[in-house]
Length: 161
Image 1 (cartoon, rainbow, N blue to C red):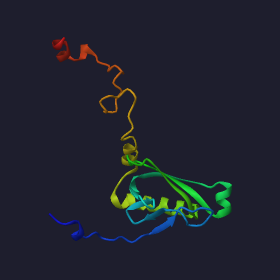
Image 2: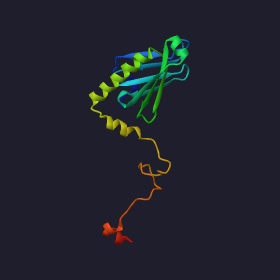
Image 3: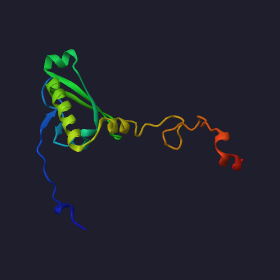
Image 4: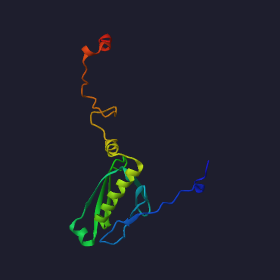
């Protein structure tokens, strides 16, 4: 078995990086970065947490700016994804949010095309992890809804009764 210090991990080029800003200055302990496959959010000083999301799983990007954010030249991007652990990711108080919004949207689309992921596959993944209140077995069909069955059309059903 390989020791952890002997494992070589390919360092990917960082395409974008920023920090959460307070009053327009990067003085927080939340860092954002993106390579050609993933978006990373690292938070904390003493106890750190690293969250990553695959770019092709991002379904939609929304940017917002409050008046104060506009004054300080920052904004918030909300990423809606098909990722079960993080269906909504906020990139708070980042510089040039509109420019990043356009860049991310274009890059996500290119990533999907390069991986051969169709839009319908992404939309189908979006419902994963969302449980219907009456779906105890998790098959996506509510259990309390009676299944229609025509006994006249199924002779095997008649024998079972």
